Length: 365
Length: 259
Image 1: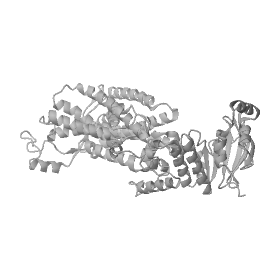
Image 2: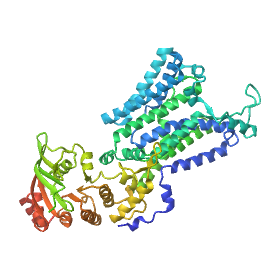
Image 3: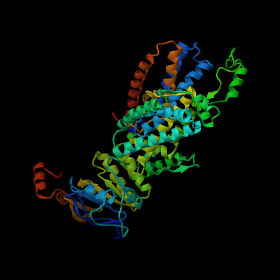
Image 4: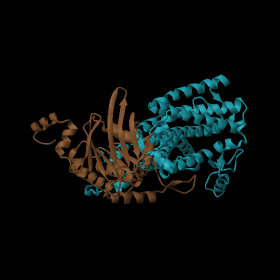
């Protein structure tokens, strides 16, 4: 009973029906645009590339978690507050209490995973929208962060992490730099500029690949593999697509959702740890608005807000667009407040495009 | 006559003060299509949910292949070989046919931690199984949302059959379908029956029931009004039993034909 009326689907149209479409087009557009207006500003020199790569990688780390969670049909608005909270936990434990940095990091991860678990269990057990439950945690965690910080140090910024993190193996895994010899070699053959004066004269301006970028790439690869290639990935789609239908065929929907809340929290903690190691300090206002930025990356990447559809690669490209535009406006000397205008606009466009793609897939008219 | 796969004896189900089922007996044998008819509110849904393990009966006995069974969850009955295809909750439209077909039972290859779904195998089986049911998929990657209502039911039925169902419960599979699609689903039921699977076909459409049914049981106000074999009952009699007789006859008279 093949329906002859369904035969005429052009290859182009089929190629278009994929979640990443908008993000791929957007990435190309953004690069062309900034090559044109900021091509000679140093944005595409070694230092400039490093600059927007790091910013994009930051967005990507939290976007991967938010992406898988959104496909599983839930939101986590507490990501930003969790970033601030995890950072302050690490700083208090290592600087104030004198714990080894690696132990502080492990404890921060344990706390974040536990918070993700609590988020998930509350959403599942109460049946409330995750929007409300995690909104509560957005406030609870931010409040606790500021209170803890002031209680222990009488200020909202806790510095001195850099000194205690010196030589710590786990701290290096978040704040270190790899491939230094390769970059030195690139500098030697003249592909990367070197410092001409000061204590670092002769060293390349870009030292190597920061661990932050390595984490982002690792999380993207992991997320993409998990979602598209594994059994668990199929369950993520199913849990977000129609949880009742999924339950009927034996998919453990509750477990999938709770694990995704924990994964999102894990990503937030990776972000927080990298940031603390980079700045050498924790501040109670870190991570502000990050939950929304993560969601925007994911939506630009083609995921549906209603769950059941999306792509990790798309979310990563969304993060890249985000980072390039934010830094590009800086390089091109544009007013940086315009960045927000851009964000709002691209968000609306992405949602409209996604809705259209969904109609093509499901055949709704 | 072969022994029944599932036998339900004087099943009662109470929800608080409401008596939803007041003694229903029903059995299903391999290779037959047993139609369960009844008007809205007759207790059809409660009854099949009891059979599928969603509800536990208040009284009565369920025999599975001759031995008493008690299903605590849909999972239990599914593992015993009772598959239910619900009218609207069968498929996830945004996911591909293959992903839907294998959902919950994905075949894997490789070693941990790189275990992944064997999509080549999964796609191949999906295409083959769908072809057996008379549906030529454009591609196993196509989203279920692009299929028609009848095709979706067929994917769900093919899935149940492939995973070894002995009894297939179809909850009003034709009620939302057009004429052509209904015919397709009915012919699918016929194919399934010929494989030796017992089909429980719930409907309130007498003509759909008579087209494929071997036996007919009518449910009214939580009770069975009796079971008849093929050829022992006319459409009009079935219709009267379902609707409760007199009034319906008058209505039909004024409307000018069988509804």
